Amino acid sequence: MPEEIVHRGKVVAAVQGCDVIECEACGFKHVAPLPGDEELKKFYDGEFYQVEKPDYFKHTEEDKDWWMLRYHHLYELLEQHAPGRRLLDIGSGPGYFLEAGRDRKWDVLGFEPSPVAAEYTRKRGLNVVNDYFTLANAKDRGKFDVVSLNLVLEHLPDPRNLIAEVKQVLNPGGILFVTSPNDFSPYQMVLWKNAGFAPWWIVPKHHLNYFDVQSIQEFYRRSGFDVLHVEASYPMEQFLLSGRNYVGNGPLGRECHMERKTFESHMLLHAKDTARKMYRAWSDMGVGREFVVLGRVR
Image 1 (tube, rainbow, N blue to C red):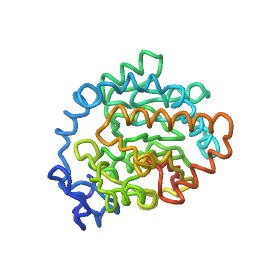
Image 2: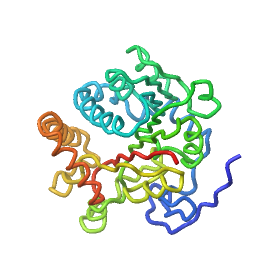
Image 3: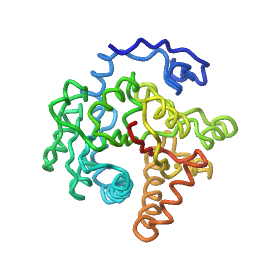
């Protein structure tokens, strides 16, 4: 049984009747109190894609070329560090990360709790389990060289317990690969504290945990991983700082996203070395909408 955690710490924000605390036990920010497992299961099994993100698959298909450029860049990082090419993607969503791996001759498997997303993935001939990842569910699947968590950690009531189970399915020298929102970043804080914005990135129904570039690295160390590489994605908050307020404005948000895609696609296609330096520089400054971290199990 995982040890019981007493969650306490300074309240750093309050949104929609929920506090976000700087948890002393966890070492990162999260909502308090945390929701129960049944409440979360109902949301992700039946509401997340169907109700909360009805255009998700449409937009994902429109963005596929950009996503694949991003994902091939990430696989290039993994191929520099992983002991082999067997990957487990927890929370595999529409399966494009799995698809990019398959295209590069990786042996890939997804775990995805949403039946809608799992079926969307399966129809493209990819191997996905429509279930939540647990050690019990995965024990017959063998060991993996990489376990990836793409936009997953922020949704979990107990990230520490999940990572403890992930360690048990990794091969010696295996890699934990995490992408998650970079929250309470310098750009966000300027907008919140000095430009009249509410902390729009705090969405308690969707995101329970709020990591940043520094706290995720500390989380890795506490969890028994040595950090190998950190980078960050395009800092979308630059649009807000430039006066293009997409918060609550879906069409403008989509327009800004398209501009980001165009810029990043040019860089990844025609100036890849510069793009790599750019991603690293953003993480060094603590900015970027999401961070990417690779760590090796000790």
